[in-house]
Image (cartoon, rainbow, N blue to C red; front, side, top):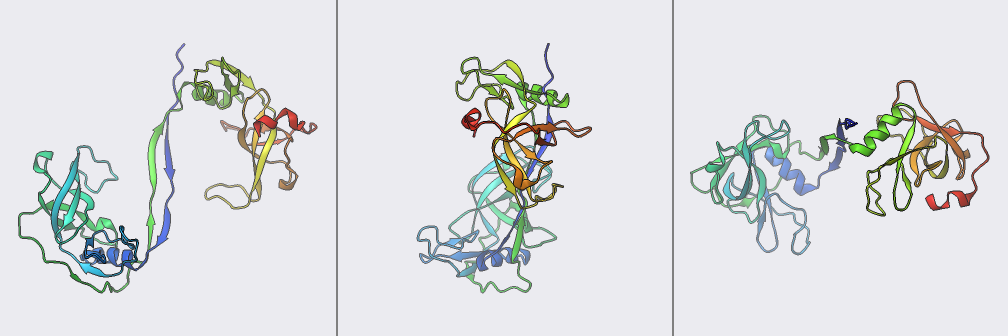
Length: 315
């Protein structure tokens, strides 16, 4: 009988906030004011985007210059299927553009009707966003341009009113995760409050959660084995920092737990006992909450602690 493989949307998100030094602050604030700033190195090269340190000598850079809004495409790649996260809602080209008078290339997008309209060496010009906040998206895109070259770089103090000093970078990945045959069986068993692993036919180790193959022997695993539900704490840590979105009061204990019959430890939260009484060798069992597909936490069973020799290989 063929088992339907589970699939679910998954989001991995790690936005973080960083402060800007004087060079990056001037660059982003300049974009807000429709001004492109680069930085001049000791050798006289002009870099856009500007860097805080010379990529050749590692010397600190601070001599800002204003550069042209026009430039030349140095390389490109066509994107026929933009997503809602892309700068344009129609097919476009990713381009590296060397602005006139500069010695490095800026990555952005080119608004072009088709890949036939894009070529290395073509001339382009910045198209500014109507609303600008001090971000690289203040450049809405580049557009084809057939006019004269822009003015040569000229010194700029980098002074702007209400300069941008802090940015939040939204690191996020949205995708659909399919756990595969082995973990689908594992997740379905958890919904029935059973814990199922798979045994390697060569080394006989039982993997929980199962992986579909033994990482040691490199052979497929197919024999399903029910383990636990009780187990032994092999090692643990005390968590003192509250995680965003996690409704658990600190301090609490997170442990590696070797379930009876398993060949390696899995991790789980320990509750039902003061955090400072959790110990290696303590015997625990899973606790499910109504409607939950996996154990909410593990609690002590009241059994005597396991002898270290029975779990030392799993620490």
